[in-house]
Image 1 (cartoon, rainbow, N blue to C red):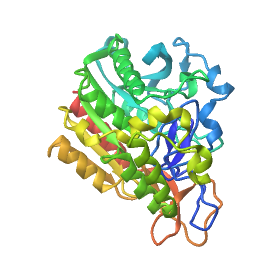
Image 2: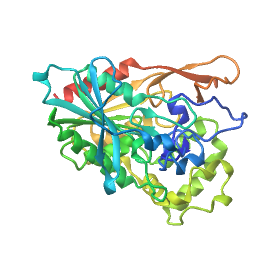
Image 3: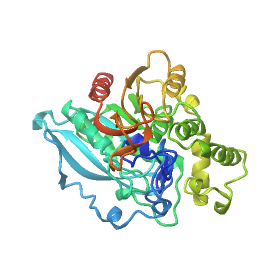
Image 4: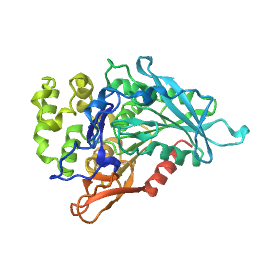
Length: 393
């Protein structure tokens, strides 16, 4: 995990960070990297602390004008849109519609994609200075090809959802943003408000669980790479599995103190590796995130659910899926992409020493060899789309 301005980001999750090993100048685990103006924990650490407090000029420049269609994949129409989230923050997004005859252009089933840990824009993970992973754009393409509409949006604090310099993150605000996205989609003339599903990735899955348990507009739910245990347990596994086991004790001490009401320690007292994970300005957000109980929230969900995970991820694994299934019920569907990471990119082991390839993942896979991401697991991508088509039919 890596810390980012929009929360934690997972380098290994994306399969897009530089390979590292215990003796090669360890970087932050992939879920906790600061990236735009927010701090959001991501199950696989990454990016630099400076990005936590500033999104850059490009984040504020793009036009939200819905009348101009964005570059869209064949068979789809994409429009830039904007809607009001928590505290009236303008959230920038992309509405994707399948190209249909004019007479058939209404009554579509719709899908809201809720972004995950770290610096995630409407298209996917976008760590500053690193190669973007357009996971959400790929999901949207799969949905429109199947005749579904979708809304994906820039996470609070990134892209066209930038926060003011003095504003901080709040988990409840992210839930409000997601509810506003559902409301925006439900009010579209093209969409049947009785046929709306939600897809949550990583932290977005925690948001989706909270939302689905109380919002009757959510007809079905897909959870991709979502923690089923307290985040500290997930991060401990991620640290241990990605060569940062010597940082686990420090991580646990800080989080346990935070949850016990002791607040965050002074930055100067933390080991250099952990400082970017615990910015003092984001204490409230971090408290809510580490205190979040996915199982308790899952017990409140009463809609069809599909759980999807990559078996090569270093933090979220079978224990998370098992815990969520136990809470959601035995009819919950589970899909495991056997050689994929958190964004369902297939991970292939590389021979020899650690690679300098910028696409190499920072976690180890198979015999301790560095790994590199390639194509997404098409079986998992197809299963997600087919589930949505069936569950909101």
